[in-house]
Image (cartoon, rainbow, N blue to C red; front, side, top):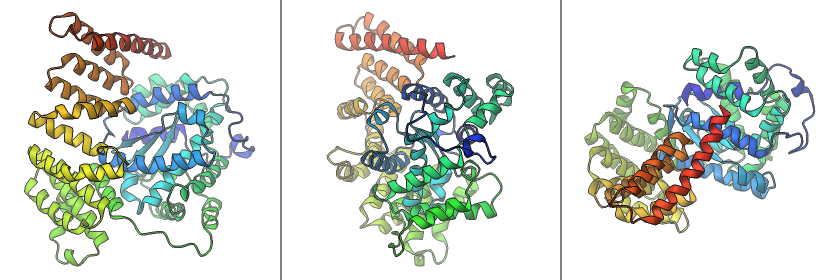
Length: 508
């Protein structure tokens, strides 16, 4: 992701600054003019997303992923209840967030209900409401079918050609020669012009997104705060670190409209939660700002007067210091900072859970799996409460599996992981851990199938076919041949994925 993702946004779905014909025309009613079917749009999104999964900046951080996805799902639920999201669209699209390590402040929508969020955005927003406002805006681009409506303006371009142009934009950020192989002369400019979001569409996404905030449990002032933040950055920053400003240029009308939508006398939004401050700190550390910056963060709690700082300043500083020390391999400093963090978040359930997860992460990095499991014992309860009956949250599940694998006692996680991937088949990380669990339990055939399913989840059908075939070969040999049910499942899945591979090859 990184610069590649920023490039994809600028080429694919950026706001038109020049007065193009689409910006001057009246938008069709919601859903009208969308000549591109939902299936075709999802297919295009899948084509793009499988390339993003291979980008070295893509990150599946269970803690941040859960935090952002929870905010996003609340907005999706509000859109459904308000009639902005049709049942067909909800069923056919992915509604999935991908995180990128890029330090730039950016977020974007892609065809098929995929959304990208840079860690730079998470690290800079002051509250969960500001982050939710960005997600609501991007979500509204998709629910209003802006992508399909813009593609319909260029009838000569097929979806697959559009996909090639988007992938060309991705390649351009890292390898201009590769970009030239994908983008054909002036066609790239034509596609870019056709896929620029008009200012009418931006205003519509503002309006619809603003309407989702309160029903989803967020303060609508988050829109105003984010707009003010963007406008301030626009005045003082021109170094390219805020690509969201280029892709979503603010106008005085848009800013005034957001301010006017907040009712007079509305209560001030709640201050940032400790959990949000911790997540913003986590994003800043995982952006890999450099060893010197990490060292500065580790040393910060030792500054004179640190103890007198407000809690809202100490907690993210403790969190950043702990995680930065882990990145530096200084486990003694990490444990010391973690103790300070735990003392400060005592009494805040959500923040205390994040501290426990960080403690488990620390001990796993230090090679002490039993200590990691100790941190996770309490988090299992917190996760169950948070997930309304689920045995634990995804971060706890993944961390606990990793710890138990190291102790050789991961058998109990097999059933939980199987249940999870049944309802979340696109979770490649969970599939990979399940494969390791089965391998440890001397179930090689099941392990190979889980490895194959992990490749399917990343749309790497060629690799998946190889693993399924390896499973067939394994089943034909002695020892595991008696597992006829698993062998039958592998045969069925192989045929299905081979079909998908042929479709993928035909696209190329």
